[in-house]
Picture 1 (cartoon, helix red, strand yellow):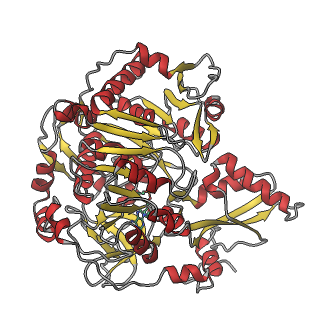
Picture 2 (cartoon, protein in one colour):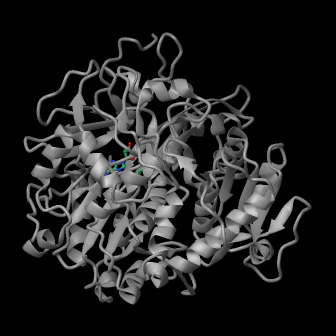
Picture 3 (tube, protein in one colour):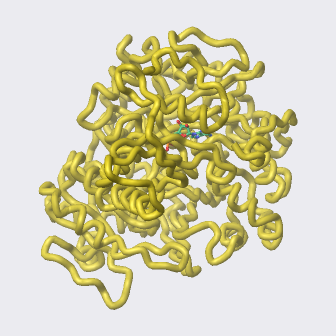
Amino acid sequence: MSDEHVESMLKVDEVFQPSKDVIERAWIKDYEKVYKHSIENPETFWGEIAGELEWFEKWKKVLKWEQPWMGGASWFVGAKCNITYNCLDRHVKTWRRNKAAIIWVGEDGSERIITYDELLRNVNRCANMLFEIGVRKGDRVTIYLPRIPEQIIAMLACARLGAVHSVVYSGFSATALQNRIHDAESKVVITADCGYQRGKCVPLKNIVDEAVKDCPSVEKVIVIRRQEPKIKLEPKDIDWHEAMEKASQKFEPAVMDSEDPLFMLYTSGTTGKPKGVIHVHGGYMVGTYITTKWVFDLKDEDIMFCTADPGWITGHSYIVYGPLLNGATIIFAEGAPDFPDPGRWWGIIERYGVNILYTTPTAIRLLMKYGDEWPERYDLSNLRMLGTVGEPINPEAWLWYRKVTGSRLPIMDTWWQTETGMILITPLPCTKLKPGSAARPFPGIEPMIVDRNGNPLPANEGGFLVIKKPWPAMMKTIYKDPERYAKYWQTINGFYIAGDVARQDEDGYFFFMGRADDVIKVSGYRLGTAEIESAIVSHYAVAESACIGKPDALKGEVIKAFVILKQGYKPSDFLLDEIKKQVRKELGPIAIPAEIEFTEWLPKTRSGKIMRRVLKAKELGVEPGDVSTLEE
Ligand code: WTA
């Protein structure tokens, strides 16, 4: 571990009390009272929140939960709804009709403003276009797009007609995309000719062409052509703009059961195969709606800038669904935070008068590296609320984030996961803040720190984070893999096991310490060691590989790979480079190891499982813990 990193883990004892005006404005002024009510009367609590939204038919029961297998939890049983009705129609019926829903900013400063009414009409057109080519309720559609408004339009159009969207991050390679299309058996893929990143045009269509070659389920590929001259289309392809032009702007939202799937999103776990996490219309809608509203204290006059990519869960819940359910205006930006210069995001905040900024610790550390002079150049006085997500935030980054935005703003350090769908552990604007802590559970959520057997641990002792009871936006299942889903609940006492290690201090504040399993967070991106290893092993010269997450001052963690070469191959810079290329080809640039070490030995259990924990301990120069199962 570098000195810099050790320093960044220093404890900061300072506690920040919320200011009077923050509490006065907040939706929730008394956290303890609301929390107590939510735990004592969960069904009343969630039922009241659901009542703020519109349903085609009301539920017969808020929650049906069959212990001990919690897979049996159903929310808003018997209710009928469509999440897009609440994201769009509900607002278009009111004065919000002509309010900006999306302000899109391109890397070159170009801008598109889309009102709620316009968004609804575009979503309807897109739903008609999909219907026309045979997409029906329950069908899967893969969306492989850069951060442009069409990404959001396509997601909402699928939801409107009852199809299940599977958004794949546009940084994934053809092989990774193909695996995801294949597993989902998608009927249609929606893509663009290219995305823009750091002034460069990143081609996407060729990646899709390569990916769909061996995907017989794919009948059509819809292509958004941004460049001139326009790229050539294949017989399977449809031009987005032409088809949208022809499509009607009216489309009745499909009547969905509360428990019908809304989307699937692939995420990394402990095996090489990513899992398709399924979320449903009803519960996900209620969970994302209320967390966006209460955590960020979102009001009608607010402009929210969430810097995530809808290729990941944060973009689904806090760019698309949560803010639109609340009728908010979102800033949606393509490109990097530091291109053309490190003032890019600060400039966007000034230009549009952004009120809420939600980003990752890695981005904050990156901007911190460029120094205070960049935020100082801009008027950030409209900012009212800050948020972070995706990985633990070190106190220095937390303090810097607060300092450069005016030393007065609350920071919501939000803990949650693809599987949880919504924020579960977080401060609310009215709670006191401790730098580096995600504070307390959101109302209705009962987390606990326990040992392997489910016994609660005393304050400040690190252990497994579990959630005792179901919550509305929890995943419904893992696509085609109910057993993998059941494992989340069966590992410890029928509680939901998150896979994170955390401690709770004497005030009940949660401090996250990292993952308990083989998931790595690189710049907040979630990757599994097993999938990186299988990419490495697919290289012709590699016999075996083991990957670990190594602490990094900027990215939180970076990947370090240990590689055993096949007989007859010798370590060389050439092979090093080749292996990196192989990972890029199999997964994408985000998965490329920062370090590769050639070795002749890997620590294994007697049954042959690689003990990555031993490698990690050795790397960090700490005791490896229990090694009794290590082979001789
Ligand atoms: C980590 C991202 C510490 C955690 C929304 C979790 C965090 C994983 C925080 C889920 C936070 C997320 N503090 N760690 N505030 N937020 N994590 O599915 O390890 O991409 O299990 O969802 O990110 O990653 P995922």
